Figure (spheres, rainbow, N blue to C red):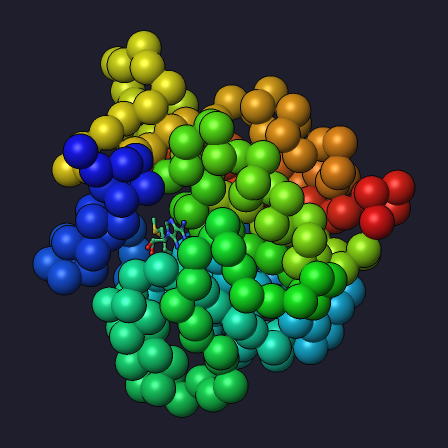
Length: 215
Ligand SMILES: C[S@@+](CC[C@H](N)C(=O)[O-])C[C@H]1O[C@@H](n2cnc3c(N)ncnc32)[C@H](O)[C@@H]1O
């Protein structure tokens, strides 16, 4: 029997092998564009870590905006595609690395910004404390955190009473506004939080800044 982590991993391997995964490959989220443009004024040229970078759409965007980018994913096929797109777009200097969110090989306080588009919502609730500890260790004291996770309105959860959905081994979970507050508001100030609705929606888009007292 595969563990939840192994099943997820197997799903992502297959998703990148087939190219049939359902999220945008190259087009960055307009919310990521807006948040990063905002942070460009506050931490120009800052160090950014993209967690679960996939095919690199947000890592490439961040590098185009002048951030110094490290992008990790545990799926080698995703990283291969990300390197390819960076090369095609002539975006240099992104450090793409194979790594697991739960054992990241970086020094403490090395990043100004951590960005997660669609990685946390694939993790089981029991793993959330380890995930958050990882971010807090890596973020500088005055760092920012950009998060995008499923909300209840995401198409897979419509009409379901469950908070989670499993298909082809992949675990997905939607977050309520309250859960996001409970998980993060003690350590971060929520600067901007909105629910992306409509076609292609069903996501919370959140920009946070680390609280001074947690540094
Ligand atoms: C839904 S995809 C999103 C990809 C990318 N962030 C984007 O917006 O296009 C989630 C990504 O997280 C990666 N991932 C999931 N769990 C991970 C973990 N524990 N460590 C590293 N990467 C992980 C998957 O391989 C996948 O590429």
